[in-house]
Length: 297
Length: 317
Image (cartoon, rainbow over the protein chains, first blue to last red):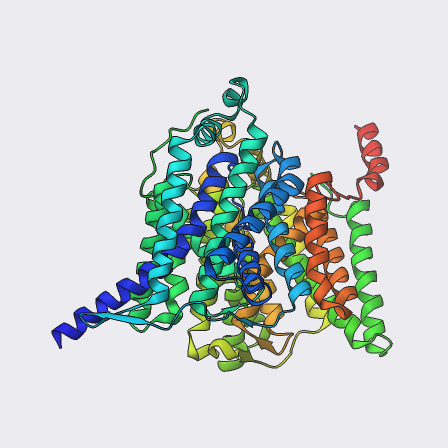
């Protein structure tokens, strides 16, 4: 009996990590965009949905295998992210925060219902791209998909870390997020850097979308709403604007959700995430990894 | 002393009564098709929702997007009282509004320490939590929803709407309302001038929640069925769009926004798949080219009617 309980716990941890790595990928985009333009990009979850659809299109219509389909979807969403930024957010860069937030909500609705017009509200089934192989270690089941998901997310996160920390572009990104005006004075083209950030964030969301389609098998035009909100919770949990925070926050949220589901309260799962969000905001608004910034008058 | 029966108030009252009487006449004489009546009552509900959210977002400047949560509380509490406990309609509506207001205090006290985006997200989370609680409560029908008889007539909806708007407008024009506006303009300056910012923020939040609860009660007692899915955050966004469209911070703007949006959605009812796309595009275009909305922070008022009498009063002195 004791061993089955431990097995159960480990099984939930495995499930939680797979789910959490999706949240972490989406949360990274939220956090990067917030870090650089201080905007909650509500449309981010819907970019993920577009990513899932373009991956689906690549696999079913263009008959691509998994990896090229993933790259195809990431590239198309990077383009979409830049377009959204240039058309909807750039004119509002100096507007009030509320105006920018409402625009983001508008873009989100546009992607959801525009997508619905384009591909209809019908739920699509993702083709099986992975063999149904299961590995069992001490009674804990690892699906082939779980492993691919974790590996893909870890590889993408490492790539992101290298880009942000060791490339010239990454250095410029950090400079812009630290002080946009000073960065401009130092000869950094801030507009390009902001577009680049949107491109990277959207590409990561697209990867999350494809993984999500593979993991849950079904996609629909409104699939981005809830994971988008959850990923935002993850970003806030880790400290919004902080890249490692988003990774840890995403994984932590995934774990919490699968533990709540494992306890047989899966209908309360979303409520628990939002409760965590409110508690984090009240107790430590800067998140787990955040530093307290003193308010200036 | 201010004269309650000045020219503006009398004209406004006459206008309200006339509007009511015309519509009531059309309904009683069966000239008005049911779809029009439904739209008119919907407009009343949305006007209450929009003005009450405007009190929080526009007047006090606290960005809340969890209004559907308060509406859900009002709807469910009033439904329980009028249907399960067989209480009178007035009691149901009032109780729903009061419980929503209590929830407003409960949420407002801790979360109003947050600012801007963070407050928005916290209220969004609250709205979703409320919805999930009702979704998981079998007593009120869970996901399937709660059916109840339709008791709200045009008289009720219009009367309550007019009453709510007058009460909220008076609040905005009072000392308290000005304190709230000062918080919106500059919180630190307001605080240093001696405005108790927490108190006024919670006050605005509670009032907003109260009227949202009332609107929820009217909704529940008119539409036969309430389901948790109705009160998702898209509804909160919809109300937000109304006040932004009309002009954040303008009470009459909120009313204009509510009327425009409800009529637009009624007109586009034939093409539901286009409705949200059009709304979304309009919203983005509006934010880029006219972020202040139709009315800005201006109010439509009948002040021009009062000028003559004021002059007379001044010359007498």
